[in-house]
Image (cartoon, rainbow, N blue to C red; front, side):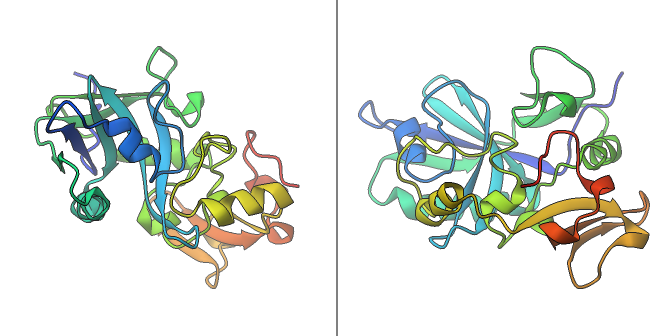
Amino acid sequence: MTATLLTSRAVIRLSPQDDGEDIRQFLQGLVTNDVTGALPVWAALLSPQGKVLFDFVVWGDGADLLIDCEAAAAEALAKRLSLYRLRRRIAIGIDPALAVHWQPGEGANADPRLPALGQRWLGEPVGESAEDAWLAHRLAHGVCEGQGELADLLWLECHAAELNGVSFTKGCYVGQENTARMNWRQKVNRRLVVVPLGESDPARQRASYPALGLAVDHRRIEDIPPSAVPAWLTLG
């Protein structure tokens, strides 16, 4: 059996508790991407200043929404979403019956960030772990994710525009003002890049992966070598 299970991921389920609750409209006012249309989409929950708190993939399941997120951050994300719930009758919690699966290659279930990332889907939490293969594949395509790589950075510095992680037409969400201003001014001065570990700048390093000989750096655009720029990214 092909290993597909991403054990570092968890699924949070958001469910309406009466007919008057619209889960999509609830999440629409919080996250960076449009969740009222076709799903899945990559999105983030930002601070009011526009910095990343959590990134995730949002899936639909009837009237429910499913959030595919880091397992280590799942409880904190569910708690943060619950704070925004106020008196609305919405259930928010980790769904242990679901897990995230991945495999390389083309198909109908392409990762919403970049088709080259392969196929992604939700299913039962069974099978062998594909974590090592997924990490190597993701970094080989220059795509960053998770709190260890993205936390506290401005969302557009994380390639949100290039990787379909933000809508500039959906209306207000938490952190929208600063994100929209950066886009309007076309002023993204720093970017996350995957570089060989030996070429990483310790002062700019966000994460390191010695087994792969790679690191993730947060660098000013003028300090990014051409060899570190993935094919899908154009630096202005």
